[in-house]
Image (cartoon, rainbow, N blue to C red; front, side, top):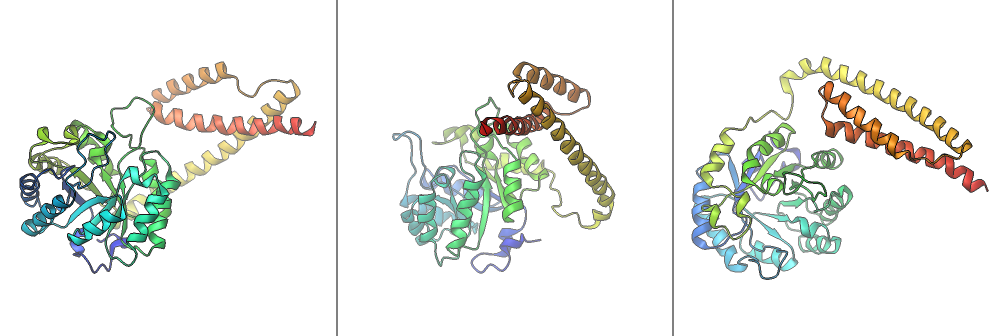
Length: 364
């Protein structure tokens, strides 16, 4: 079934938008022989529906490889002609847009470093007014849902109708096995608010080819609409992101070992109804318990105000959280879940008690 956002397209074949959409290709287009060999190998994998390749590469340091520019677009167009695969590339300026369209690029994506700048996003949106081309918008580097949504809104206001998100993970201050921490809840919330397809860029999330298989399966289990995977005919020789790229043959193996699940329940809906009803009842009970807890927290705030006690009792909080984590582990619950839930509850309690103590200060 086609993703609703991509129905009634006129510029590309409808098979392109069958879920899951697999986009594969090198991080950077480095030479004509490299992109043609990679494309020819990928064209033999039926699941691959689009060839991706970086033409302009925003690098942290100025002496790093920044892409081949216009000559790379000519090679990408030749790869499209030889294989029949639609092609996509990243654009960061109106000039990039003009050149990409000149060389018959089928889809464009906006990179994470560009999405952080609303001025740049607006320039790109203006450059695409009246153009019927799919635009994929990567999440910003920071976990800022509103900034990501704002990029979609700018393109929507410019009349761009073929929009999808690319989830490529976020910068994270804690130690993590990922290059960019997935924070799955953010793309899920984006989908809930905007009803746009989400493609998961497992290469940029992982930063390491050893993590790709498990991360791809996780994305599919969470109902992603597709995968973006970096493939290079000789990954060890890649000029950019060598550690996260795989060969087309390795991609074929990765895809063969994935379990693709139905996004819509279909005939099993009735079987799920009873379990979902039970979850709804549990959720209602949780809300009642949270409301009761906040009432007690407010009573504690009143006591602290009367007795001139500070809101935060850090030693007690650390002890309680450690106990909750231990109890949760006995119940089979993840420490990450326990920490997130109780830190959110604790923060809400602090804010409520702070308002109570603030009322006394404001009355003086």
